[in-house]
Length: 307
Image (cartoon, rainbow, N blue to C red):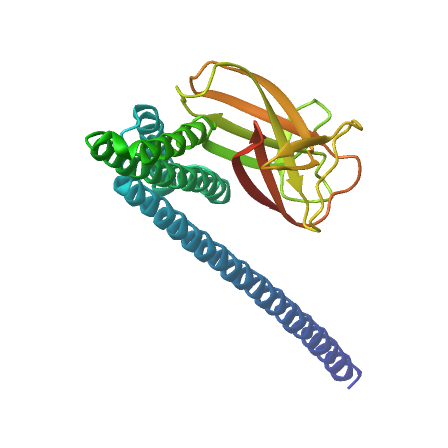
């Protein structure tokens, strides 16, 4: 009898150990399943996020492609007899074609490529304005020449009318002597510790303003040293002051302030010019207007925004 009781106790002990092991196995399986479900959920979120990023990049790539293709089409519609402007536009078209190829092949950061595309679009708008201005001047001069030819064939009794026409023509020649730009760009910069200048659209980082432009060929105006005045109009409508106290000049028949100036030796040929203005305080957010004057006349203007 004692032997049977010992056997029963041994069986119960084994049964208890088996139940405990089974419970541990169940708990382990539950923990394993819970961890697996967590990892699957985390992976699903990563895949969804990556999908959204790829969709955004694809949309940005399509927008930049459309912008560049539209610019190429617009360049095809621009016509001018000016050899220098033609050469410059062909060079810009090559840049656009190269950038379009980079975008289609996915070379480089798409957002950086978009910024380059926007810069090329600003340059193209400058050509559109320049060609339109030249065409208007040519039309006016052609009409004037026709009028003068007709008047020269008339009797001497029309002397007063001819003198009046001659004076008007002199005024047009004076207008023709005003310098013009074929391209202009302006923006804010900050300087890194290594001295490198970096473009920025952040007002709090801006340390200076840089305006660069290309003076076109002009055979009418006299060659020599030319003084260019830069006026920077801030979002609150005020002209940013020059570093020195002497910051006033005459332009378009009035006297006002300028922000910076530079003397350039102009020999009637295209030349690149850059003018800088250093900020003394933190700059405002909003749109800035940059105007360039020479001989009291407006040469060109541009705008940029700071956030």
